[in-house]
Image 1 (cartoon, helix red, strand yellow):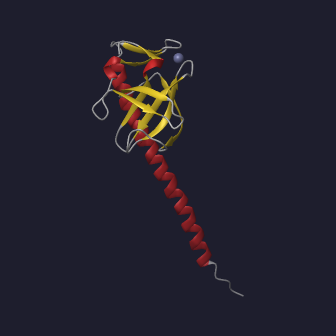
Image 2 (tube, protein in one colour):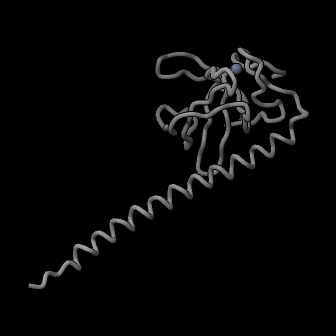
Image 3 (cartoon, helix red, strand yellow):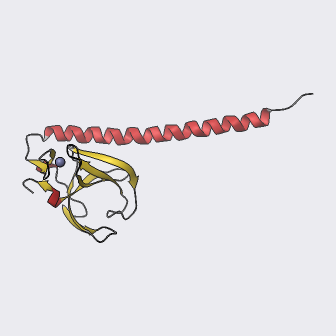
Length: 151
Ligand SMILES: [Zn+2]
Protein backbone atom coordinates (compact mmCIF):
# COMPACT_ATOMS: atom_id res chain seq x y z
CA UNK A 1 0.00 0.00 0.00
CA UNK A 2 1.32 3.40 -0.92
CA UNK A 3 0.82 6.27 1.54
CA UNK A 4 1.36 9.79 0.34
CA UNK A 5 3.22 11.77 3.03
CA UNK A 6 4.11 14.66 0.77
CA UNK A 7 1.42 17.00 2.11
CA UNK A 8 2.52 16.46 5.71
CA UNK A 9 6.16 16.88 4.80
CA UNK A 10 5.45 20.22 3.18
CA UNK A 11 3.72 21.40 6.33
CA UNK A 12 6.68 20.30 8.43
CA UNK A 13 9.13 22.02 6.11
CA UNK A 14 7.04 25.20 6.16
CA UNK A 15 7.01 25.14 9.97
CA UNK A 16 10.79 24.78 10.10
CA UNK A 17 11.22 27.64 7.66
CA UNK A 18 8.91 29.86 9.71
CA UNK A 19 10.99 29.22 12.83
CA UNK A 20 14.16 29.87 10.88
CA UNK A 21 12.83 33.15 9.50
CA UNK A 22 11.78 34.30 12.98
CA UNK A 23 15.29 33.51 14.28
CA UNK A 24 16.86 35.52 11.48
CA UNK A 25 14.55 38.48 12.17
CA UNK A 26 15.42 38.38 15.89
CA UNK A 27 19.13 38.19 15.09
CA UNK A 28 18.91 41.16 12.69
CA UNK A 29 17.16 43.24 15.36
CA UNK A 30 19.85 42.37 17.89
CA UNK A 31 22.67 43.21 15.48
CA UNK A 32 21.12 46.59 14.72
CA UNK A 33 20.84 47.37 18.42
CA UNK A 34 24.41 46.23 19.06
CA UNK A 35 25.80 48.36 16.23
CA UNK A 36 23.98 51.40 17.69
CA UNK A 37 25.52 50.70 21.10
CA UNK A 38 29.01 50.29 19.59
CA UNK A 39 28.65 53.69 17.88
CA UNK A 40 27.56 55.15 21.20
CA UNK A 41 30.57 53.65 22.96
CA UNK A 42 32.93 55.18 20.42
CA UNK A 43 31.37 58.58 21.13
CA UNK A 44 31.91 57.97 24.83
CA UNK A 45 35.61 57.25 24.41
CA UNK A 46 36.00 60.56 22.59
CA UNK A 47 34.45 62.42 25.48
CA UNK A 48 36.41 60.70 28.25
CA UNK A 49 38.31 63.90 28.93
CA UNK A 50 34.99 65.65 29.56
CA UNK A 51 33.38 66.25 32.90
CA UNK A 52 32.24 63.02 34.46
CA UNK A 53 28.78 62.41 35.81
CA UNK A 54 28.93 59.80 38.56
CA UNK A 55 26.58 57.65 40.65
CA UNK A 56 25.73 59.57 43.84
CA UNK A 57 25.75 56.35 45.83
CA UNK A 58 29.18 54.92 44.86
CA UNK A 59 30.86 57.58 42.61
CA UNK A 60 31.10 55.14 39.72
CA UNK A 61 31.48 57.08 36.42
CA UNK A 62 28.18 56.82 34.56
CA UNK A 63 28.32 59.35 31.75
CA UNK A 64 29.70 62.80 30.92
CA UNK A 65 28.35 66.35 30.66
CA UNK A 66 29.17 66.34 26.94
CA UNK A 67 26.70 63.53 26.44
CA UNK A 68 23.71 65.55 27.66
CA UNK A 69 20.96 65.43 25.08
CA UNK A 70 17.62 67.13 24.58
CA UNK A 71 14.34 65.33 24.09
CA UNK A 72 11.20 67.19 23.07
CA UNK A 73 13.14 70.45 23.48
CA UNK A 74 14.45 69.91 27.01
CA UNK A 75 17.25 68.05 28.76
CA UNK A 76 15.27 67.60 31.96
CA UNK A 77 11.78 66.19 32.33
CA UNK A 78 9.56 65.66 35.34
CA UNK A 79 7.24 62.68 35.33
CA UNK A 80 4.98 60.69 37.61
CA UNK A 81 5.14 56.92 37.46
CA UNK A 82 1.91 54.89 37.83
CA UNK A 83 2.52 54.69 41.61
CA UNK A 84 2.46 58.51 41.78
CA UNK A 85 6.17 58.92 42.49
CA UNK A 86 7.76 61.99 40.88
CA UNK A 87 10.95 61.53 38.89
CA UNK A 88 13.05 64.39 37.59
CA UNK A 89 15.13 62.90 34.83
CA UNK A 90 17.93 64.26 32.67
CA UNK A 91 18.67 62.94 29.18
CA UNK A 92 22.00 61.65 27.89
CA UNK A 93 22.75 60.28 24.44
CA UNK A 94 24.44 57.41 26.27
CA UNK A 95 25.59 56.28 29.69
CA UNK A 96 28.37 53.67 29.38
CA UNK A 97 28.55 53.25 33.17
CA UNK A 98 25.00 51.86 33.27
CA UNK A 99 23.90 48.27 33.04
CA UNK A 100 20.63 47.90 31.17
CA UNK A 101 18.41 45.05 32.28
CA UNK A 102 15.09 43.46 31.43
CA UNK A 103 12.88 43.26 28.38
CA UNK A 104 11.86 46.41 26.54
CA UNK A 105 8.46 47.68 27.65
CA UNK A 106 6.02 50.19 26.17
CA UNK A 107 3.89 50.41 29.33
CA UNK A 108 3.44 53.96 30.64
CA UNK A 109 6.29 55.13 28.43
CA UNK A 110 6.89 58.87 28.90
CA UNK A 111 8.24 59.36 25.38
CA UNK A 112 5.92 58.40 22.56
CA UNK A 113 7.32 55.95 20.05
CA UNK A 114 9.90 54.67 22.55
CA UNK A 115 10.21 51.54 24.63
CA UNK A 116 12.07 51.56 27.94
CA UNK A 117 14.40 49.25 29.83
CA UNK A 118 15.69 49.71 33.36
CA UNK A 119 19.20 51.20 33.77
CA UNK A 120 21.30 50.50 36.86
CA UNK A 121 24.68 51.71 38.11
CA UNK A 122 27.26 49.29 36.70
CA UNK A 123 29.02 49.18 40.06
CA UNK A 124 26.49 49.31 42.94
CA UNK A 125 23.38 48.38 40.89
CA UNK A 126 21.34 51.34 42.17
CA UNK A 127 18.43 52.00 39.82
CA UNK A 128 19.51 55.16 37.99
CA UNK A 129 16.86 55.48 35.30
CA UNK A 130 15.87 54.08 31.93
CA UNK A 131 17.20 53.42 28.47
CA UNK A 132 14.67 54.62 25.88
CA UNK A 133 14.78 53.06 22.43
CA UNK A 134 12.87 53.66 19.24
CA UNK A 135 13.39 52.29 15.76
CA UNK A 136 16.15 54.83 15.05
CA UNK A 137 17.16 56.44 18.33
CA UNK A 138 18.35 55.59 21.81
CA UNK A 139 18.92 57.76 24.87
CA UNK A 140 19.15 57.44 28.62
CA UNK A 141 16.81 59.25 30.99
CA UNK A 142 18.57 59.25 34.37
CA UNK A 143 17.17 60.34 37.71
CA UNK A 144 18.79 63.69 38.53
CA UNK A 145 19.01 63.22 42.29
CA UNK A 146 20.84 59.89 41.89
CA UNK A 147 23.70 61.53 39.95
CA UNK A 148 26.54 63.86 40.84
CA UNK A 149 28.30 66.14 38.42
CA UNK A 150 28.27 69.54 36.82
CA UNK A 151 24.65 69.32 35.66
ZN1 LIG B 1 26.68 53.26 41.97
